[in-house]
Structure formats: structure tokens, C-alpha cells
Amino acid sequence: MTEFIKKVGREVKKAYGEAQREAQRQSQRPKPRPRTRPAPAAKICEFWSCQEEIREDHFLCRDHHSELQQDLINKCPSCGRYKDAQYETCLDCHAKPRPRTTRETNTRYRTRQDPDPSWEAGDAEATSFFTYVLKLDGGQFYVGQTRDLRARLMEHRQGTGADAPRGKHPKLQWFAVMSTRRQAMAKEKQLKELLKQNPREMRNLIIGFRDIYRELEFD
Image (cartoon, rainbow, N blue to C red; front, side, top):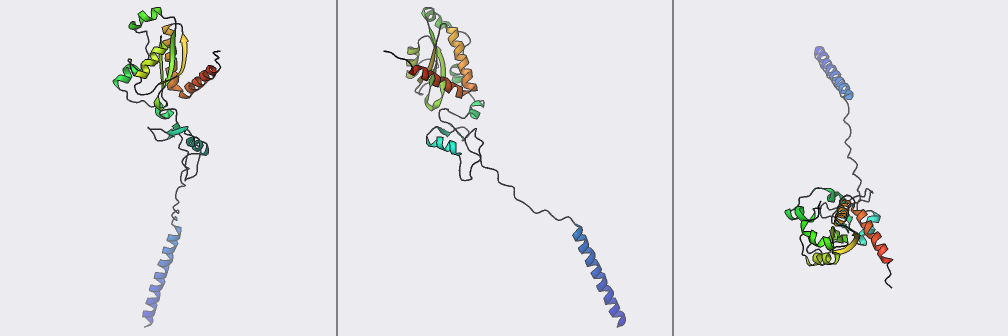
């Protein structure tokens, strides 16, 4: 009986020692870090160039929301962000290369380097030439040059001519008088580059032209 009690005591002591050692090993193991959710990203105004943070239940900052109510901005059809209403797309989408149809490549978006031989007869009798800017439906601009501005505007409105913007209701926004065809073509090229690089500057050019036009007096 005594031997049995001693044996049980040794077994209990052994089990207790193993439990102690296991508890010590567990305490020495690195504790897993509590999982934390990443902070939600700040919501940004949806105007294409604005970086102002806004409330979660808003989609535009205060200034651009006011412009939306005045119909000064609308959504870009390409990327879905908001942009100035006078332009067809936002500047980011405008700068992206886009596929062009054969007609666009060959006529409308081409800037001639030399006068067309078919112009020579009429140009010989002309005393002035014009570079002009039209505004089309959707806020898009069109730049051209001619020796007869009135006749050229009529062609655009009737949709005739090689590169007339058909169905766009063109409106004359700006023009300049040049003494030679080559000067008119050089100015046309300059304005087309300006339109590609900085459309906002084109708008400023037109506004300045209107301001001067209002100073005209015909009495």
C-alpha cells in the first residue's frame, strides 16, 4: 500500500512538472499581433484635377459643387470624372492618344505645310487672308484659315467643303487678318498646337478678343 501511494505521488509530481514546463514554453512564444483594419482612404473631389479631401457622403468639394449647380462643369464621357463644361473631355483624356478615322487623319486634324495648288488662282487676286477659331457643339474648338472668311463660314454652316465640321453648329469665336496665305497657315498651326497643349489658354485668347470687339463703335 505504501509503495502504491509513493508511485502515485511520483506520477502526480511528474505530471505537474511537465505542466509547468509546458506553461513556461507557452509564455516564451511570441504573441500574435492583433489584426488591425487599414484606415479607409480619404475621399477626394471627383473633379479631374482637384485633390481636395471631402466628406464620405459628398462627391465634389464646395467650389466644384457650386460650379456644377451653375452648369459650369459636367462629367467627362471618357473617364467619368468632372471637367469644365466648355470642353469635350477632361485634359487627362484629351492628352491620351486616341484612334482616328481615315477622314480625321487625312483632313480635319491635318495642318498643311504648303498651300494647296488649287488655291493659287484665287490667292493671286486676294489682298488679305484669315485665321479663325470656331466653337462647335459640346465645347470643341476648330481652327482654320481662308482667304474669304464670310464664304468659309457659310460652307461650315452648310456642312460643305472638304473638312467642314458637319452637324456641329459652328460659331465664330476669334479671327485675325494676315497679309499672305503662308502667314495664315503659320498662325493656324500655332493655334492648333496651343489647343492641344493648353485648351484653357485658347479660351483666354477668345475672351480677350471679345473684350476688344466690345470697344468697337460704328457711329
